[in-house]
Amino acid sequence: MSPASNTCILTALVLLATSTVLPADPGRTLLFEDDFERNESQEEKDEIGKGWGSNSARRAGGHKQVDLKDGAMHIFIHETADHGVSVTHPAEFTDGIVELDFMLPGPKDNLGLNFADLQYKPVHAGHLFMVRIGTKSVELLDLKTGNMDEKIRALRLAKKVTPELEALLKTKKKRIPVSLQPGSWHRVAVTVKGDTLSVSIDGRPVGEFASEGIAHPTKRLLRLSVPGKAVVDNVKIFALEDENSQP
Image (cartoon, rainbow, N blue to C red; front, side, top):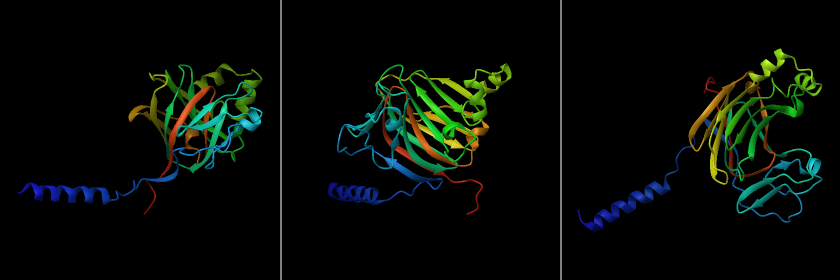
């Protein structure tokens, strides 16, 4: 076969490959994505856009705590803030996946992915469960039946936690050692399926945790919780189909 024929065949294969649209994953539906490739109109207050909100007005006197810069979302706590930064976006699903790129600037920085349902009043501020990522550990917590249950929270604030309750609360969380270099980028995937929360970083499984609060029927809000500094990019939120549902 002549070199010219080979060239024609290779060209045809390239065209075919680039024109073929791969089918979407049949097991999940993309609910939201954001690459933060946009500019703000000012630099005084949070102006995240695309449905995002923050607690800067209530907790930091309106001072800016979220900055869109270089195609990423930079989150940092203001010196006047009386609470960690909370950056929120609606995310309604029963089972689902949240994926995002993140960078922790310092060795003590951490990023929380907190799942909430503000319509569920027996827990404080709708807290259901969360994943907290630090440079040395990843923590998975059931908040609904743990620390954020309003009755349990009242006992904790009153310092009336019994040894039995303390033992129960220890079963509502799991800490897994990791080693992440400060200043380096990573991609995390948090999967919620039934009563099980699982985490992978850079495509490698970190661990999973099963607890009843994770099975809350509807997760309605994603909170990115930052007590110090963190940078986030390329967020994707998926809903997973019920494997037991009939076609």
